[in-house]
Image 1 (cartoon, rainbow, N blue to C red):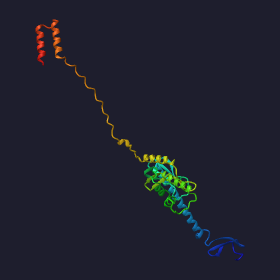
Image 2: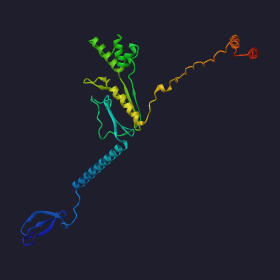
Image 3: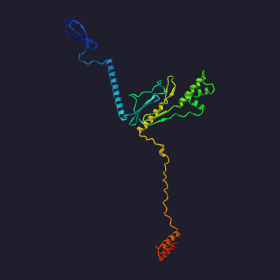
Length: 295
């Protein structure tokens, strides 16, 4: 570059210009055409734009979700009651809505699942608590249904797939499982979206499902509250009992009129009156004739 050249921007190649300060080149570079010339979008600027769009869409989706949740909460109304049944949490709302936080079968968690903002509101259709089924009277069938054919076969003396080094402990464990199964209760909640079949069981520290009898009262209370918000009126079976017929006591017989004096008594009275001079002979004869004529 001619050292006599005036300071300014000069072409540098590759569509760039570099600033000459009058004596030497500086580190300042700009696109050809001056500072007002639009820059070409590079790969990084394009990527940044895509990220900004994705973030904006995510924020919009989150805002829409919050709006829908607020609207669902408004439609559902006030919370009536809530309770934990097994590993699930249930909330009932005054306008006939329910929210159920239910743990899946494969979950390793032992506690009940909490309801959060993501738990949807569902329109309640029906709710039913089912009491524990009675154990089968046959010991063999109880084992078959509780612990499976393989273990039942072992206890019966057959060659099963397991070898028990402590048969007494094995028997005690199977008896526990059988008893636990007999205490299993259900809470079935039908909504406009799905059917929730909940049990009063949860896994203990060693992964064995145990029935929590204390949750049965919760299940019964949730059923009563659910039917109340649905407007279902329980019918008292006593209302269909045979009506009680009240039989009025038989009134006492009407008093009988005084007995008519006998004919002899009347004649005696007439005779006394005649003897006392109250009746004359004619009056006495006439009264006597009349009395006898009435026979």
